[in-house]
Image (cartoon, rainbow, N blue to C red; front, side):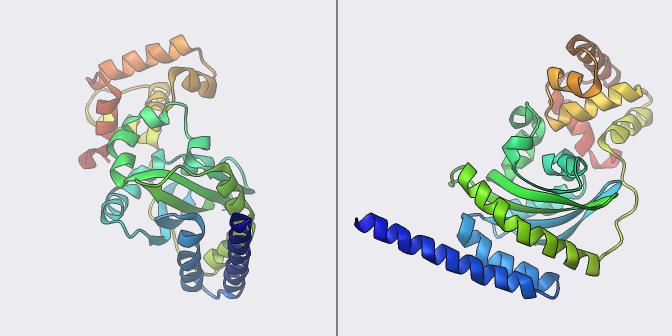
Length: 271
């Protein structure tokens, strides 16, 4: 009986805290107000160790609206890599262009089928010490989308579906308000930034070993973490044809592994 009473008290406190939070979001006048309220409430509400708000652009690098990243390792990796190339491999960035409505997901629910075995996860994502992430994406016009991410670090458990559902309900308030504020404080995107497939096409051209457009598409999907089967479904070709393109791609680029393919992307002189 005592546990039920404690549980009830806890639930009432959560409800009270949520109402206070929604009140602060409702009266937020600018991005600073929104950021302050979110950073004050969400880490305690969801036991997360990072919060990042981003405006994605279809053909340009993203604008970081705000970021709360206390962990120095995660902050260093994020600041040093995300807007250079990491966003191109972020499943939330890929998802941002699939809908104009609000979507809320856990990272693992939208990631490619081989994402966790990809070189991106091994050499970049794991370096951030994150173990899980959930967030929303919401299109605001044909070429821009908003993303709010909540991350959980090493030592914590993976995000439960019940927590995702709670965040989904909260996002129905957060996303529209962030959209209004982002519109008021709209900044111009950076200069045009090439897509993954365009980067690989340019890398090959620069090295004097041109690859085909199809091979550049395969390269982009491989480093995103898609299996041959997944790539075949996306490009409407057979798995065997994907393997042929992949072998030809590796031969032309003089590489033999996904790790080396990823390495070409992260070589700053080639970006």
